[in-house]
Image (tube, rainbow, N blue to C red; front, side, top):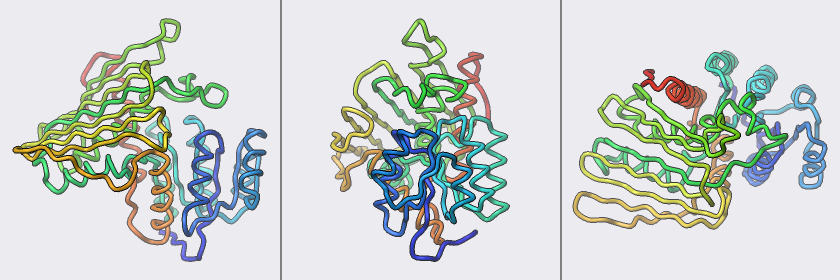
Amino acid sequence: MKLIEKKAVRFGLIGCGAWGTQHASAIAKTPGAELAAIADSSEQNLEAARAAYGKAAIYADYRQMLTGEKLDVAAIVLPSHLHYEAAKAALAAGCHLLMEKPLCLRLDHCDELIAQAQENGLLLAIVQQFRMSSLWGKIRELVNDGAIGDPRYCLIDLWRNPFRLGTDGWRYDLNRSGSWILEETIHFFDLARWYFEKAGDPTSVFATAGHQRDDRPELQDHFSATLHFPNGGYAVVSQTLGGYEHHMSVKMAGAKGALWANWSGAMDRTLHPDFSLKYFDGKQVQNLQITRTPGEVFELEDQLADMVSAVRGATLRGATGIDGRWAVDMCLKAQESVKTGNVIRF
């Protein structure tokens, strides 16, 4: 792999909208990282970037940024349908990649990017920030340590307010977002596979969905899916976008214990959430202490630090390109199940 040994790892940010600004802030805070350049097609976003990050080179076209700057890592924070082309260009320019989910909207595009990264010795990492979480990550740690025995059941549930529109309303246009399964529940599918990793990759999925608005039936605000794993265990992934605030819970039961975690905030990016983790060892319930406040803003900062370490030769803690492909595959097969009413096998 192409290693970065110099003092500062130079990041080029592609996309500086609502979530892109969070990436910019996280890069700027990360020891060993330099926010060298920012590209965005919105002049309003670029003006804000100039004001906030005066030392970064500013571009209206990411292709010009990739050819005009000597960058080590490209962080891609664009609407989903633009991921493939931007990632291809960044890899061709010799950049390691930190990609927002989903990796791509099509599996063949995922495969192409994974192969391109491997052929050029470049790292392809996916922003699945829950893997960095002090709360959701603690569950994985406990499961892997055998705290609940062989995992048999998992429920990952989200109750939240509707999605933000996104630039030009892209999130509500399925030609650009792919589906709302790819937009949010992709995080939960990734968590489920991560939690059951020792059991093996999922074998099948069955899903159902419904809509909140009769004028937009294609927007599947309500969604539930069941993933089955080789050990006989299964995970239920469920969400509604017809609720209020942002409330997520994970419940896991194994052969000899159980876990129950909750996270609640006024919105997904709140800095002061309520959270808890309970562990049942088969005899008594314990309230486990979480030492760092969990939340996607904090987890993004950890993801950036992980990326800096990884391009310097450390093992990547977060999701790889292969993990990103699996997450897309689970979502696409869940969508197929919703459409056909059938169990879909992997």
